[in-house]
Amino acid sequence: MKALAWKYYFWIILAFDMVSFVVPFERRAWEMAETLFFVVALVGLFGFCWKRRIIARPFWQIFFAAFLCWMPVYFTLGGSHSMPANLVSVSRSTLMGLIAVAVALHVPLIVGLYLYSFGKGIWEGE
Image (cartoon, rainbow, N blue to C red; front, side, top):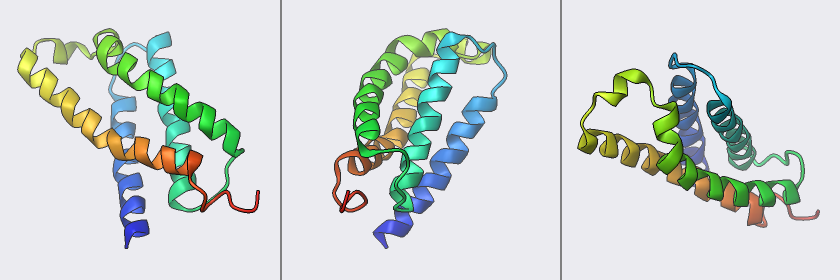
């Protein structure tokens, strides 16, 4: 049952992130970095959910550390750079609520990447 829940989560977070990728706004370096980080993270989550070895374990361990560093930077500094114009007029409390929901939705992604990077199940026999 736990494996099935992870697969459902993968499809939910994929849909959530795909919607955020197609929101029309100017694609600058900041947004491109965000897209790259999240696409690679989704590939790692896919590998975890379907128990597939993708690339190599050391890559995912390094990526996990980089992703952990990226997340707080993005949600504190990056949000103001990449925020669509229609969200600028939203109240501060509503915006903070939206950010909190987005962070909460991504916590399992971080857990899944950790388990994929440092867990033993998928990488045994390597």
